[in-house]
Image (cartoon, rainbow, N blue to C red; front, side, top):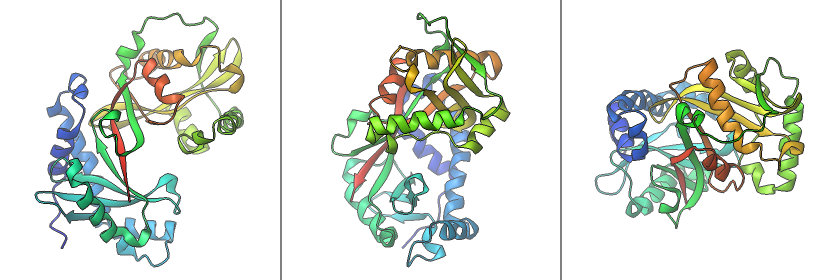
Length: 315
């Protein structure tokens, strides 16, 4: 039977214990804890709000599923472990369901996976989920038997801006003021998808609403090669991992500007622009799939660090 819900603070304390120790150098654990607590308030709302459940029920319209079936569940399983389980959908696609472990009474261990999988299927089996997604601050290679998923790639803006390397003088950033180049960005993604079919599942072009939000915030930049538009670089302010971050919304070069070494400099240019134009004390943050053979190693080369992420236990 489901147990009484934990507090957001209790969930946050466990999340804090699972985070990468690299984060301690960017913000002390005691300062991250209240921000993590606020993030976990959302998990408790997903476990209790019938209004949200009704919205999800109408949005996904899974046959046989009632409104209550969309609520997160605080589910007991292996000794000493109770887990917050949530039904999710990749890219909001109802044909791609999975179960997310969004909180727990203690850090999960590999030995817990069979019990976690059994509980996930017991609670959300009617959705036919394909896998259980779990967060860990461990390196991506730490779980060789589990499926790879999106990783957290991050670094303080000050560290990224301080990287000394030759930047081609023609490569610059200019604040974006409109959406006139969105069609070119969409074409650039389509070309990359055609060249690398796996890319389609790893990254998508920024939507017009998100682009408009970045432009309004003054945090979207046109990438220029000389005076020619060559791509986008943009962020939005958020709280992630208990840190004040700028989350990357787009980092893109058009096909004709790839292969010139420009990509390696976009992060440095973006960090310097954000320090000059916005809040210099934030961390640049983004999620990149570990199997994205282009973006993942490029982010590491640009100075961002892998500070954890998700792994998959397939049913």
